[in-house]
Image 1 (cartoon, rainbow over the protein chains, first blue to last red):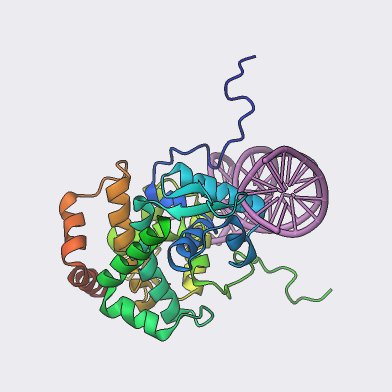
Image 2: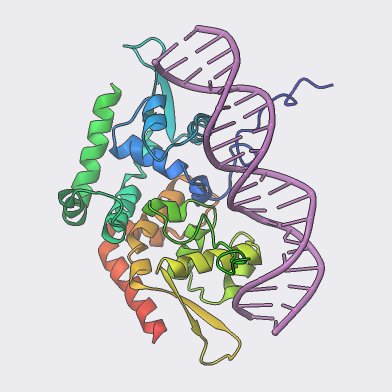
Length: 144
Length: 144
DNA sequence: CCGGATCCGTTTCGATACTG
DNA sequence: CAGTATCGAAACGGATCCGG
């Protein structure tokens, strides 16, 4: 019996090579994880577990793995806490920020259950490019 | 036996009132349907069935129903073909166009399997607001 | 404690066949 | 042509356990 891939746990939807770019976000959690990574300052496994909408740990681990596999997220050991891991967005991941902001804006406009500060929405509408740059800059600053 | 809700077919994820706005797009197809409605000129049930990535008819029916339920899509009989139905975006649906364009741009940048004309991407980057207005206008023109 | 894997019942998906 | 019925397959997700 070949030792090759027999025991590997298939990541999700038959490994990384998904053809369609929007397919990556074709599930309930992936987009939320990216959003919280980009806009909510979350970086530890536990951050996502605790809040969000109550994602299960196995699902979270799977999504993070998939995102890493696609080059949207990177994993690093936390230099301050030996047993922690820091998740952060790659450049590819940060390039999703414009789309995320537009979705947040849309959600804030039509979904009253999503509490988004009015000032935040106004900035998206009036100075989006600048805002994108700022969010990116702050993410990069944190990364170093 | 109470005739109340015993025989009702639950639409999807326990009826319309989904709390989280991004939840609506938390599946493989919804976002693609909206995209094709907005940018690919599709309007008949068959249009989505035929191309796209091969969505099953029951899934398509379900997603369209959900989108209608959320006020993103409307259904109208086709005045020219008695047995056809025209699906179109509401204002709420059209308000997703900025987000869609950003996602398309992202996909075009990082996913070489999604063939998007370079000129299209450049317009998104250089004249996005104007482009949004044009797409909306053309959708409204078709609707009347 | 922390990230994450395993188990396993439940829900949802989706290919096919079918109906008005 | 728009949509539904069926039913096996896949994904989800809660509880629990594990190595560091």
